[in-house]
Length: 143
Ligand code: DQA
Image (tube, helix red, strand yellow):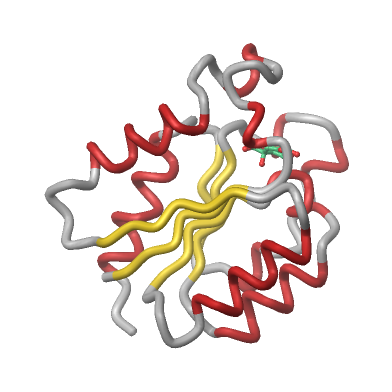
């Protein structure tokens, strides 16, 4: 299966940003970890990061007809981007929402995800392992 692993705004700052919450690994290190942990799964991964809502939306559209699944950490867009939500439902590709931190025990504004009901699952609070679990889940999904 071809899976797009996408990260949204400020996730390029991992390793620098709020290490107590997000850990010390950089996004490149996390992506290497994901590739290593999934090497025995039948998946072809593409990694992508952008700080821009429209660029993320374009990438979701480009996945149409190409990818079998999307793993998405939309960062703060999770909490208010109806445009990203609509992009996910437009392409009808199974999407798993991932967050490094447990958004449900943080500030109230993070408790709400406007994308969760168009995603097949939400995985949060498991750090980088969450991305691996999301990929495993997508390989089990029957389309
Ligand atoms: C995050 C949680 C979001 O609330 C935050 O805006 C992020 C990262 C996470 O991975 O825990 O940028 O999605």
